[in-house]
Image 1 (tube, rainbow, N blue to C red):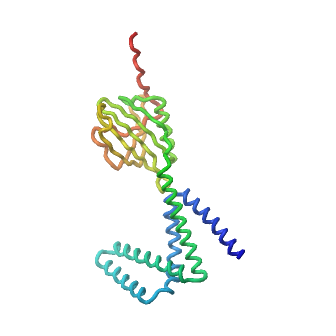
Image 2: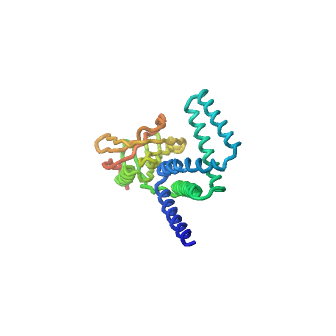
Image 3: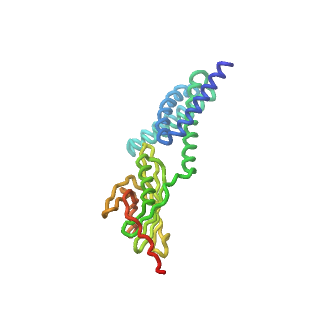
Length: 271
């Protein structure tokens, strides 16, 4: 009993550490780990599980393989590969269940452990994705861009925070109020990490004439930030390679950066 208790304790601690790693690493790690675990589970389950399969199941498998061959001949190997993958997945699930219900010894233990590790991977990764969706993303603040690109030191500082975070793919948001002669636009930029240790950027925009600045709404997804140097004293960052073209009449998604043109100070009223 002591040996089994020690085994369960060690295995439980390993599962906790594994769950913490999966939660921290995210979807990219989960995909690779799942493929590796399934690559081990499939042969173990099929070899052990077929001991408990009756002849009708074997006949169904043979018929399914014949169907896959027919599909390959009619539609090509790509569709056949999908069909074969579905068949292999279903067979693995059935054989895994049979091994867990009727198996004994090492095959049953290995199959059970692999299934538990896969389940822990799924739960921890799902919890990670849910947490990322619910927890508010830190904000770098708000920046203002006036007519002709005029901005302020505080705006440039907020934008610098966003660009610095983008270089390290740290999730952050930035709100930029962009004004022109006949249009007001509010850009809500966001850094979104990808599974390959890189990131992309989204820009949710509300824009319209001064009388109705929220008249229109559009969202862009852009993979790159590009330096944009304009008139003397203007240095800005522009979102580029966006999946949606800039709508005609909408101010381009610009982020003020570093050197800036101060916003004009209010003219004192005569008195």
